[in-house]
Each structure stands twice: as C-alpha cells, then as structure tokens.
Length: 269
Length: 199
Image 1: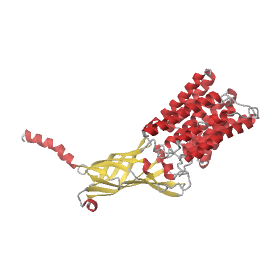
Image 2: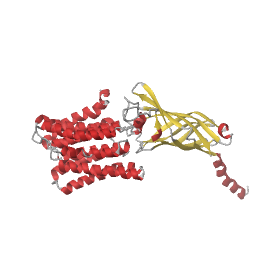
Image 3: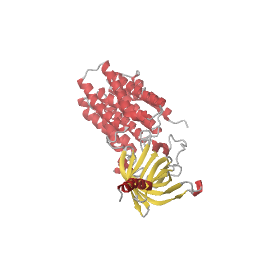
Image 4: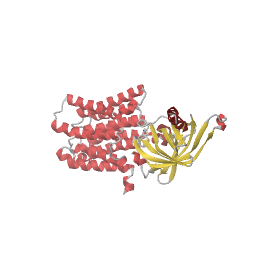
C-alpha cells in the first residue's frame, strides 16, 4: 500500500481525482461542490511534501493562499452580491497574495529580473483570477474546463521546468477539476461553480505556474501564456450541446493554449 | 608581590591566551562536501557541492575550536549536467524546489557548537546544519587531520591544516521530502575533504 501511495501518478492524479469527485458529488446539493478542487490540491500536497506551515517557504505560502481562497470563495457566493468592484478586489488580492508568497525569492533576483518576474506574476494572477471570476464563475463547465487545462498545462510545464513536485501540484489541480467536471457530465446538468470553485482553482493554477518560474526554470512568458487559458475557454462554443460535449470542447480550447505554454517550456538546448 | 607586577601579569594573561587561538580560512579550491544516498532502492548515488567557504579556529591549549561553513547550494553536482534530449538534467532537478530549492535557499550552513579533541587533534565537531530554513544538530567525525607548512605550493610560507570529515543526517528532518524514501533515500551520508590556511 505504501508503495502504491508513493507513486507520483497516485499522488498527483488518482488520489486527487477521486477525492475531488467524492467532494463534488457530496457537496453539490449545498452548492459547495467547488470545494472539490481545494480538496484535490490538499491531498496532493499531503502526499508530496506534507501539510506544514513552518518554515514559511513560498510553497507553504501557496498552501495558505489556497486555503484562504477556499474560505473566501463561499463567503463571496453566499454573503456578498457580485459587483465589478468585488471582482477588482479579488484580482488585486490575487496579485498581492502572489507578491507576498514570492517576495523573498523576487528580492534575491537582479533588479531587471525582479521587475520582470514580479511584474509577470502579479499581472498574470490578477488577470487570470479577475477574468475567471467575472466571465466564467457562472458556468460550471467552462470554469471546470479552464481549471482542467490550466492545471494539466501548468503541471506538465513545471515538469519541463525541472520541478516534479510543482508538476504534481498542477496535475492535481487538473485532476481536481476533472473530479468536479465528471459528475456534471454524467448527470448532464451544470453545477454551481461560483467563487467557491473559481477563486481557489485559478489562484492555485497561477501560483503553481509562478512558483515553477521563480523556483524552477519555467520561462516568464509561459506564465503569461497560461494566463490566457481562461480567455480561450470563454470563446464561443456549443452552448446548447449536451453538457459532456461542452466539457470536451471547452477543455480542448484550454488545452490548445496550455499546449503552447508546454511547448515553450521545453528548453531549446 | 608588587601590585604593579600583578596587574601587568593579569593584563597580559588574556593576550597569551588569545595567542593560542589559531584562525583558519577554508580553502575553497580543496574543500568539497560530498554526499551519497540511495537511488531507487538500487544504487548509491554520489554528488558534491563545488562552492564552499568558511573558517575555523583552534585553541590547542584549551582544546576548543569553532567551525563555520557556508555551502552554495546551486553548486550541487552529481555529474549529470547534459540534457541529452531531456528537458532538464538531474543536477537541475536537484536545484529545484523538490530538493535544494536554491532560488529560495541559496546557501546551507553548518555552525559548530562544540569541538571534541583526542590528544592534540580535533576528533569530532558537533553543530547545527541549516538547510531549507530548518536548523537541526548534525555531528561530524574528523577521520583525518594534519597540520603543517604548505611546502608544495608555498615553500613552507603558508601554514595549513587539512583532513576529512564524515557525518550523516535524514533529509526529511529538513523538510526535503520529495521522493523519500522510495525514489531517493532519506539518509544522506556526508564525506568532506577540507583544507584551511592559517591567517
């Protein structure tokens, strides 16, 4: 059993997927099925590095931000009315959280790199989270597809960048999104995603990509390409087609962009 | 005894004691911390750090000493530095967050807390290793120790000490949990060759 659980495919794929599927099915009636994605991420983190908060490294700050986002998401859905200012605040929070997580690493870079990496990270996260919350949160299929493509794309790109652990975090996010999408595809009806799913899912995807850039060797422009995944998923599609077909088509939209990021992440020499 | 003489003797004592303390700077060109650990449960994999700096002091009369070493974690090498069609080499992977996380923790340090002597020579060093922001005690055994003039390179103008030290620790104690123990073993054995030049 220990050997089975030590397998990276189990840690980053199977276990997060099963966990997310169970959470999505169990909590969907309460409109909390979106918590599937944070459950998947926590399971992966538990297996790969353990859930610890000291010393407070960048990776552990990602964990804290992911948990905070999972707490804030339902609050936004159930206690607050969505407004443009609210979306702007969420985007600003994502950028601020990113800079907080990676500030000690950014400070160690030469000035030009610090501006480039810090700027790319903050802009990418603000855009991704803000756009997804404004444009995708109301559609459980589109935002699920965005998280699926973002997670798998980030994970594979992170592996190419030299970090298997960040690769597994990304793939676990994709697996979690898959666990959220599958019950919708089986039932043939869309589930509520809202900020409960959108904010933690897109935030985790962006933070893992930024971590792979700053701590491994993911090129900065790959992060910006990955930030376009939510935009690709927003493109017109078969809105009246069966739910499973919508999930496939919108995921393919996202995979195209994620594939470009992965191709760019493969080193040229 | 004349109080003035007593005073002079008392004032001179710390100077004579201080004169016993020898200060050495570590020779970075001949000091290499090597490490070995189990790989995939089959072979033992060895690697080393190419950039090490530090200093040590010895007081032979008082049989005390101190050691401080700073290792640049980005200088880790296991001999696999050619991508050869792969996206990254093993050495690049070792620098990533999975292992040494060099972007966030560019150095690891060892600071002694006690130096034990057997006869006139230091025999063991107890201290704290700081790796990945975690500080834990690690003991080093000095297996070979010799001091004398550097006759080969400086015609005896420079005095040096050199030798080998060994030790071990569990990498998971420092939060380096990736792949442990199935892919990459938990126990890290250290073998360090060192030189220091007297200042």
